[in-house]
Every structure is written in C-alpha cells, then in structure tokens.
Length: 429
Ligand code: ADP
Ligand code: MG
Image (cartoon, rainbow, N blue to C red; front, top):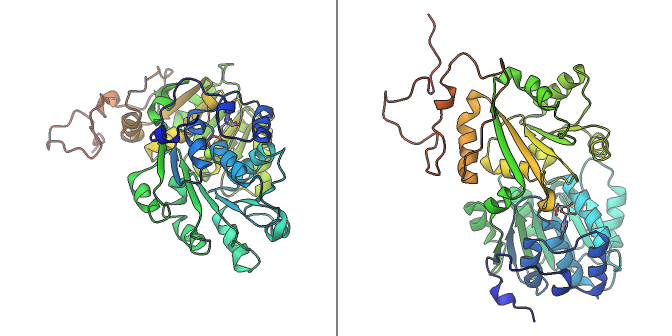
C-alpha cells in the first residue's frame, strides 16, 4: 500500500525500491536499464504524488535525480494515450538541459510508445517544427525558442495536461518570467503543474502560487544533501595568482575530471587561454559559444579528452557530466545558492566529490555568505608560498569567521570599530 498522505515534506524513510513506486513495469525496466537501483529521496518523495496528477513543488540539491522525478510520472500518466498530440511540456532554462532531459526521456521511456522532442535555440527550426506538428507527445523546451514556434501558429497545446518548470528558481526569475508568463497564458489552465529546483527562494514560491493549484511541497533538505559526499576547502589567494594556484592544484592526480567555474564569459576564455599557454588542455562552455562548440566541449570532457571543463554558471547549469572528481570555484559565485548548484556537479547521485574554492580578498564577504547558507565554515587550506592575497597580513580577519550566526557584509558595525584592514585599503601618499 502506498501512503501519499504522509509525503508532505518527505524525508526519506528506509530504502524503497523502484518496485515500491507506482510505476508501470515498462518504466521500471527503463529505470533498470539506466542502472538506477533505488530511487533518490526526491524521486521517492515526488513520484507517488505526481502520478496522481497533483501539483508539486519539489526541491532537492543539484545532482539528486530531479529529472527522472518528473519524467517518470509524466510517462506513467501518459502511457495509454494515443500518439500525436502534445500532452506534456517541460520548460528548462538552457539548451543543454533540454537536450539532457530529452536523453533521459528516451532511455526511461524506451519501452513505451511515447516520443519526446527537445526544442531550443541556436539550431534550425525545421526538425523541431515537425516534432511539434505531431511528432512528439512530450516536449522539452527553452522558453524563447518555444515562443518562436508558437508565434508561427502550428503549435497545438489544446491536449496539454502536464507542465513542468525545471530549475524553477531560474525559470521564474526576472530574466525568464515574461516568456514563461506568455507561454502560460496560451496553454490550458486545466492541467498538472510541477516545479522542480535546487533552491526555492520565498519570492519564487509566492510567484508560483499564480501557476499552481494547492501544490504539495516535497523538500529534500539542501544542506544535508550538500554535506553528504562533498568535501569542501578554500584557498585565500591573490586574484592574479588564481591560475597559478589552479595549475599547482592540478599536480594532484586525483583531480582527474575537473569542472572549473568562472563568473564571466570573458574570464572563461581568458583562463582557457592561460591554461593552454601552460600546456593544459581545457574545454570551455559559455553563452557566447555556438551550440556545436558547446556540444563538442562537453563531449570532449565527457570522453576524458580534456581534464578540465571551464564553464560559466549559466552555461553549466544542470549540465550532467558523470564522474566529475572536483569542482573548482575559480571565482566565488555572486549568489550563495549558486555554490550549491556548482558543487552539485560533483558527487552526482550521492557519490563522493571535492569542491575547491579560490577566494581573493575582495571575495571574502561573498564567501562568508556561502558558508552561512551551508551552515558551516569551509576549511581554509594553506596557500602555497607567494600566492597569498597580498601585502596586508590581516586578511583572515577581514571577515569574521561564520559561527552560524548572521554576520553579513551588511550587518551593522560600530563606526571606527573595525578590525585592522577591514574594508579599507592601506593609504599611500
Ligand atoms: P538534478 O536534476 O537533480 O540535478 P539529474 O536528474 O540531472 O539531477 O540527475 C543527476 C544524475 O543522477 C544523472 O546522471 C542521473 O542519471 C543520475 N540518477 C538519477 N536518478 C538516479 C537513481 N535513482 N539512481 C542512480 N543515479 C540516478
Ligand atoms: Mg536538473
């Protein structure tokens, strides 16, 4: 007997298998062929409710199997439907994510008659148009490109019954919201809507009430999941020695497959150039690269041809690469939640991984915000001789260490009562 009533804020109970979940035998076979033995907590929590057609807000850390948590219920609910109409729409923020989800869908749904299509920008419209005109029952799309197709008048959403917003925090932020609203205004209101995300800031939850009916909230605690399997460490380093330090770190053979995050496209290209000059092969993905360049970079990294993949957050968001041994934050992320997204790229599906952050003095405040979000201090490793953050010896005190109490950059301090060096450059005359 399944007991969906008790799924609110589900915390995983003792091991469930896929056989315990309300999934048709053909789907369980697909799952087995993917090599999944037991459902992840979010899958265990979401699937029983989702197959009933209820709206869901599901949060769980990156890399914990949210894609299958919504694809399996979609497939289950559509198993008996005739081919042709579009029944389900998954909106994702990037083309990589759309492609990846479509890949999972193909495998999980292999023993069903249902067909999926990925719809995203940067490639021709023709194949996608054919898919949208009756070649797919499940469409996985980025909003901009989908709207392009919708404006041409051949997309028929009258049969649509299921809508997913993947990476919902991003889909509902300012950048995407207008497009998402436009799409929502043109699909049936009578439908199941599910939001999945690694983080669910309160304003997103508030906003989502516009789109959802009495959603069940299924939350796998991000901090526990982030803590499991990932080892964190940080180096305080001079900003212009970050590349040297990275190269130094790469002497460690354990760093076999390294995902390096930088803040901007420009920095991504610059770092890749610097590495190349030092004889280190790195692939790069960012928003200015063409679709084929990105696919090639990802494939090169997946296949192990390049040991490093340098990525911006947007380009890398949710991209699935197996077996990342280390995540290096070459730059501290602007938003602390991004740190969780990034380190989720290692220790996929609860394996082990390492997260290394290079922190310049200017980034110490932002790094303290990350530590507050994680609820613990990240150990400082010793920076090699000469790569330290610069002449002021008080850098370690420039931000009070997090002790689980909010001491944010904006926390009021009494005037003149700052420790030496805080927020001040030594003056020179
Ligand atoms: P998320 O969307 O939460 O970031 P993904 O759906 O991209 O995570 O899944 C992350 C990785 O975990 C993928 O490689 C996926 O194939 C794998 N995975 C998903 N579910 C399971 C499972 N039940 N058992 C083992 N691996 C899984
Ligand atoms: Mg995902």
